[in-house]
Amino acid sequence: MIPYGRQDISQADIDAVVDVLKSDFLTQGPAVPAFEQAIADYVGAKFGVAVNSATSALHIAVKALGLGEGDLMWTSPITFVASANCGRYCGADVDFVDIDADTFNMCPDALAAKLEAAEAAGRLPKVIVPVHMCGQSTRAEEIAALARKYGIKIVEDASHAIGASYGEDKVGACAYSDITVFSFHPVKIITTAEGGLATTNDPVLAERMGLLRSHGVTRDPALMTHESDGPWYYQQVDLGWNYRMTEMQAALGLSQMARLDQFIDRRNALADRYDSLLADLPLQIPGRTDGARSAWHLYVIRLDDAAKHREVFEYLRANGIGVNLHYIPVHTQPYYRDLGHKVGDFPASEEYYSRAISIPLFAGMSDVEQNDVVRVLSEALSK
Ligand SMILES: *Cc1c(COP(=O)(O)O)cnc(C)c1O
Image (cartoon, rainbow, N blue to C red; front, side):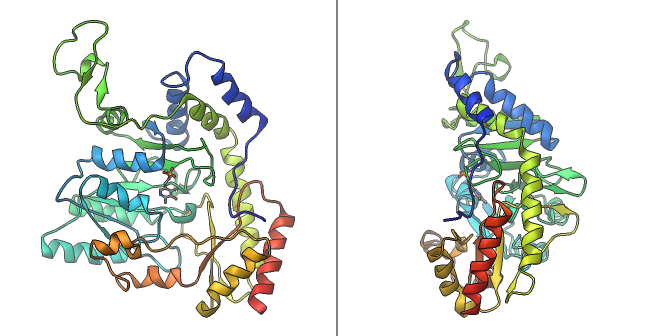
């Protein structure tokens, strides 16, 4: 089976993890801050806060922005459920903004219309979580302009998009947001097994997220409410969690960073090659956004004939091609239906879901493997 995604682990990656295992620190040592600094430097942000998953990063990000009971948070329906769940963890209501049919990203025009209606109704969101679907940046400048107009905070879910750029900026520079979140799950661009990281340029947000990832406890006298009792002293100044990344994870991530640009180049070459190999088949290739260079986490085709969707998907799986479907529109999940969302609420997202298939794409994929994918896909479509 050719998988839809797969991690790429080198001997240097293995050595980096083994070195940590032989060292004094398995957690709370030097590797985590080094990894945070490396990511912050790479994307051009001031601060990085590493945690045990992107799900945790999203949680502490929206929490640090003050999201709570009675507030409203908006995200895209075409994403992993974690992008929406972070709002629910804080007791906020979650709603969605439909996608642009061609790029699968939150549509700025739909956002503008929904914001206008929300303002008229007197219930604007406090935080918006746009998702860089498949690794391609949203039209971030337009979304940021709308957020500024209405006084809304932005957390970019860049789980797919480390290494991507938008204009002159790397995704994660937070040029158009308050906080950006990355995932290092093995199917993503680089991996720490499980892991996530939030970047920001705001020292207060960085400090708050740092507290929230570790019980709300600090040893920094500057953050304490009164003078330290002595060298043993720590204070709990907020209610946080244990979302810490281990040293082994950070060492793996740091080692993977050395090959990030190489991974992105290969993913771009494979995506360009798919575009031309698939040009004559009865399907739509992914749309591209002006000024954005995608990290190409996923390559999603949409079949012209939605009636063949399941049959083509099953044929590919049965013939060694590990396809997947990213994603089932979140608002149609039973949990979100119980909260009042309905099928029919976001037509572009539902239309996408009726035709979309993610075909294999990973940095270690060979041209021969890619040719196999295209051959089996052509067979499936001609049946
Ligand atoms: C993978 C993913 C997440 C969650 O990442 P974890 O690190 O597994 O918690 C969140 N949002 C999106 C869009 C993702 O693809």
